[in-house]
Length: 237
Image (cartoon, rainbow, N blue to C red):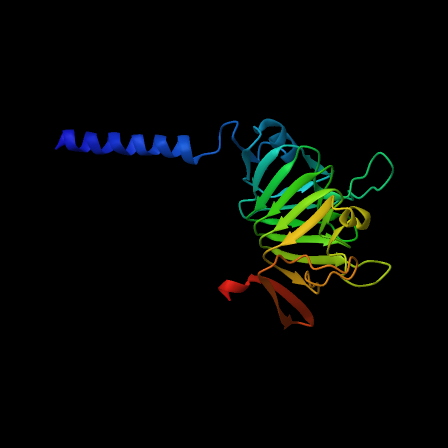
């Protein structure tokens, strides 16, 4: 009987060790951010191709730059700012909570990016970088996701604005590319999922363009005076 109990305890300890080794996040391919490390520190520490997992909400006081390939698993937490980040001055150009720049390829999921009202975007893409949004909640001002040069793919998520465009007073720039770069093919957005408040990604008024991937459709619903546009795979409706 004692041998049997000892064997069970040994197997349990082994299982716990395996979980810690393979299921945890304590090596250079998987780094936690929030409690002990800032997001910028985690990006610096994680290996190219690795994963950052949040273990707490994060409040930023400056834009965070992603310049490597990584997955940001928000873990159900939120990244926000309470002081202004936006600065469009020459040589500064801080536009967003997170900016994916040269060498960057960011996949983000499972949480929220909540920009301070009347301040910045949630995400931007520059220098030919790439962004993939799998799901989550994204709140910005004038624009939520902006592509200067590079590409963004939206597979899911909820997107809304706090501050509308001052020139038009509407949601037309909720997701947006720099016009000239979209026209010359160096900036692109592809939408395969997601729900957008008061914005139809199949009818971008600024670029007069359909961002929705072929084979996907947009359905409308109304709630509390807002219209929500949801993108779905036509074959799965």
